[in-house]
Image 1 (cartoon, rainbow, N blue to C red):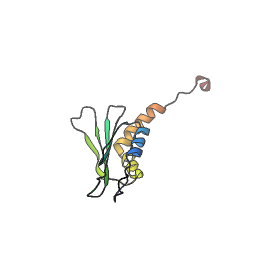
Image 2: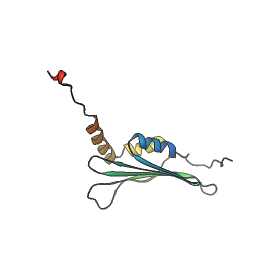
Image 3: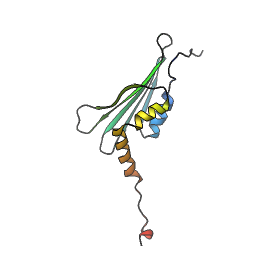
Image 4: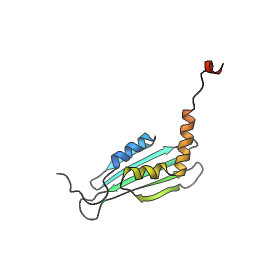
Length: 128
């Protein structure tokens, strides 16, 4: 029997996991009867580690469903992680994508990573 649909955001867990994998995150997924949790980590070129978490709470009865995500970053030598964005309620994948890709720390680290791995060499024959 399918559980009744409660008001609130739909569970984006599977599509958030896919997005994170496409961005190069190592992803862990966990689902229970009342909670879906997606956690991902991504390490930049200089060793900075970003930790992203998405949670969707869907109780069988009681309060409304909710979904939120957050991200922190730990830089090499730092004792504690910095908050990239605190727990933010989300309803759509595009909101998750905006929070993630719009974060300037992650955007800078990702740009440096992509630049390092997309630099191509010019064939010697073209240099003559």
